Length: 631
Image (cartoon, rainbow, N blue to C red; front, side, top):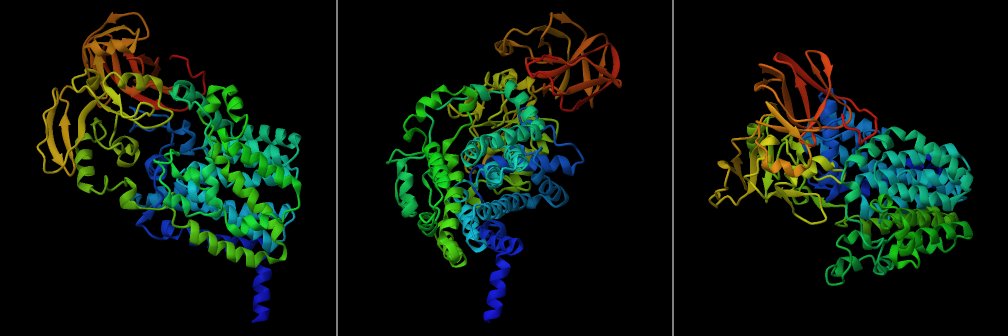
């Protein structure tokens, strides 16, 4: 038995042994998420990241490049949204797996992808601690602390942040060993993971760990490696409402009350967030990384790690740090919009883990076992990362909020030809459109484009003033006709009589919802015999749908006509307009010959064609040109 124990101990000191032990810890910690189909990660994970994942996976399954989402906003450049992770190499094996299996299991694939990133984070933290001078067994404490501590416990619902945080130890390792190429790879993966707040963490904390010259070379290398994603994102940001988002007056950061959880983790479950005037997101109050790790960290004798810890804490506390608000106010608006000091918690937990590994000495294996039991007992059931699927609001490809009847009922009406709009109904119709495959004219993305947003604002109202989600306010607006909105969905209890809505016709009732029809909706592509010069989006309020459109050019008249299955017939020169969103990279061919794309109604695709019968084809392929250039 003694020999077996020694062999096991020696095995756990090897990279393979450490990897297997840490994998077992991570899977045990997140066992309900990855091993029980009734549990998942709540909040942004199912409401925002899952639709993006499904959108990319579905396009791959259909044999298409994951460039364009046709189910939100009248079209959206999916590839240019960093959180879709189209340029992130570690995501692609999971996209391919999802594309190869039944879409009912795509939520589980995304769960495994995220949890396996936690394992990667644990392994890299182990390697970092070894480079920092910790013994092999003691380094296991660093991996355990980082993977099961406060950051991943509280923030795994932000899938992009969870992925990016996995590479933070790699960045620190490169800085520690003065290997700028390792730093470059770590920073590039942090960028490509797509969560901007974690980019600040990776770049900012790296400066605290090592030589600024290594940092500079690594930073430049990381930017070069991630340049395709950066160029795509910059193009989209230039055309989006991101720069117009409300910026918090102060910089944010953790509250002083968060430190209570460092020694009393149960405090956050007992305090009232509302009455205490604290953040509406309680995960920002959780910093527990283990009592044993905290005590062991006191044994660290390297002042460098104390400086790293102090620097991370100073940023993490945000406005509670003297001078932070002044510095924050100096920052450009573009930086403020994505800087969340709370996410520097990742650096805090990682620094504590490394310091604990250095301080625990020869008792590393015992300490790791104690820390694992301690962390799993305190953290593994936190509501921040664990919820019943039925309570999480997760929409699946085979049901909408638990009802397959509702999903199939709406999908049978819209097909791929008509779009829907919502009237005081679930936000999931908008955010989950890539999952349901029911085209919605709206969306719920931080990178919503200005043009479609301005058009939709003519008849829709914001649910929350500072948010991007909006619902129908004027059912009689001619803009609905222009946007191919044929059906409108309204929340309605099953035992109530659907109310009449002016301009709309009641179609049918579905579980929890009523459907209305807009009989005057125009098809996705249509012929307009007349066009006026576009001056402002307000002109669309008085437009005659189907009879005229607005263009970036002189007014004129042509002939009437019809578009059927992308075949246009008109007696003389005419303008074919659409409700497909314009974006750099769209091309339209007329009888196989590329024609000049015309922007119509301020935000959509159009093209002039001569009289007769012509075959149209529209194709999107990313084009990295100046984003503000009109076609």
